[in-house]
Length: 503
Ligand code: NAD
Image (tube, rainbow, N blue to C red):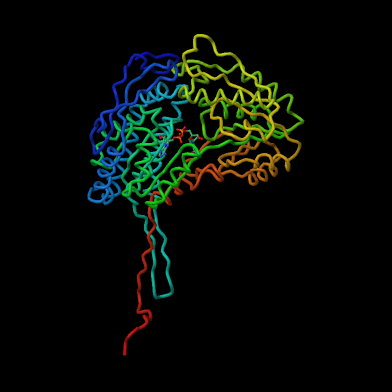
């Protein structure tokens, strides 16, 4: 272990191949096939990952089903189940440096940013343990002196969790924590491009000694393993985070088995900067909001609307900042932007820079140093003189690319911000407090921030509107998805019952 700039590094650790985790055991895929897992910084192989397919999903779902129907998990005393959840959080914290390192190695996300995300992972477990202890409560309805009706929350069954490659560990735990804490059993299908931290989660949960079958991980491709999970009749819930097009496919494929689906999908979120905004803070937030996490962030402010009065000054300041961003090795603590997840995504993001030129915009970015040529680097980029109807203003690029537009007044910017299929997040910068609220309320998105960057409060609802998602997770809102609300009607008097057929 070497310490560089205060970051503990495991640079010399070689990675073992990864198995599936089913019924409390690490096991190869039944087919014996594997997927090569590549390093985005070098494009060299990190290791191989067992390629789960439908047989493996069947095995994992059978284990989860058995654990749900006959195991101790859902009927266990609350205190005991939550002790497991707190133990998972503690074990994550104990291994935080290693998880952080492996997450950055696997995804190309800069290590200084990854550390905060990994810390959120243990907090996801602690938070949901506290929530279940304090807020998983029903309602009682007194009906005159005849009935007392009450609701209870019951676990639903086997939860299928399908996650993407951006911030994988945080997003996996974001789903696993509420699913387990509320008493469900889980089959997790992580993204094929970032399997390392899902394997670490299996190791952590194995160490926490959860009852067999409660938590299972099946690595593999979406079209095979993911699809089999979505269609499996013994799976009741699908919580999915990923692209909008994948989300629509999953909803269609889950229809025959009538599953409850929670969809956290793509975004193209606006940041609106009015002329009276705190210039420096708005600039900081704008740059961080699009270039952090390599721009591979669902809530990234990828569309900037800056008011005409300050556009020249703001764009000049942006140019300076963007060309100064430190691009480099994701394991270097000073790196601000690392390589994109894989060659396919690199090609996609680059293709948008070509589209931007064809659409007549001005594309501004620096050069990638020759020593980084092996990695999937796209330089932090500004697209200037864009118009809202253009593809670069409408489509999710999911890279370090900011599309810049201008506006005259409040009415115009609300219209422009809403003229898009997505509705995940939005950011408003103004020192006119009334205007801040007004605009935030009118922007069509699930989550808005006024004079703030994307700071999350775990108690609040998370999710998008329009093509950015269906449903809300987070806080007690997640209980609507991860539990079945049952109403129990109890007669406390002799109410009238009709007497059909009585002579
Ligand atoms: P993706 O849709 O390609 O893949 C996500 C997951 O779905 C992977 O595990 C993949 O294997 C699986 N999958 C693919 N096809 C499937 C199928 N037919 N059936 C079942 N599973 C299938 O997404 P990605 O490229 O990994 O992630 C990036 C996307 O995720 C971006 O669009 C981003 O905006 C979105 N995202 C959204 C949020 C949010 O909370 N709204 C958060 C993070 C990422």
